[in-house]
Length: 282
Image (cartoon, rainbow, N blue to C red):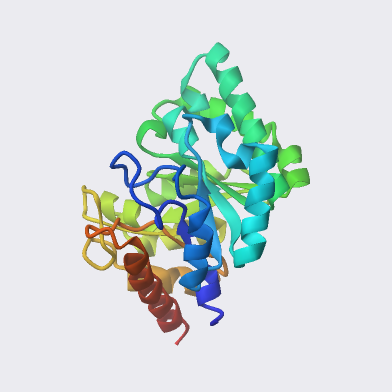
């Protein structure tokens, strides 16, 4: 296996049938099978997804589930270095009153502890769509809650990475409040393309803070489309990220296969991404 291929992972659910027609949701019926399907594609990394609905039932959050995850990881050589917390976008603790917030922050603490037990290093908190920060009070709440967990994060060996729709310089400024040792940025190529951002400007503004990358293509102002058919210049973006010194992973958070051949689609996207990373090294 090439060193490049070892850096590529996939978003959990991309090797399962769609759940309720959603592009992304925890695959309750097929989550176990995804480990062996990933192994068959030579993929060694999976980014876990977790929803607010049935959050505490998710295998990640139960002792039995954690043991099963560890066994499946070992058996198939597929590790889980990262998690996308769609739960935070579905029920953002920074946008609710204090009573509801306490329950959601308790969920956050349980989630971080579970990630620590499973060796998950990066927890993606999406500050987009329903999680978008719209007023200063929300930003203040987010900072207060997360900065209060600095020591815990260090002990747990977990880092929080924000996915944000802020323009490059604003995002760089926003990150100044968060210590680089335990907070970073999740760069999403599709979201940036959809917003019309220039990857030159983005990488120049905050490259050292990028800790995780989602490989995705979107039409400007529109939805996720197959890689290479949208507004993202992935060859250029990956070249800029690589040349900035990034040594981390690339997670395929790609469009779903229209014909239901999810493994075939992911195999194509895997090969395209290997090509872009290797071209960047030339």
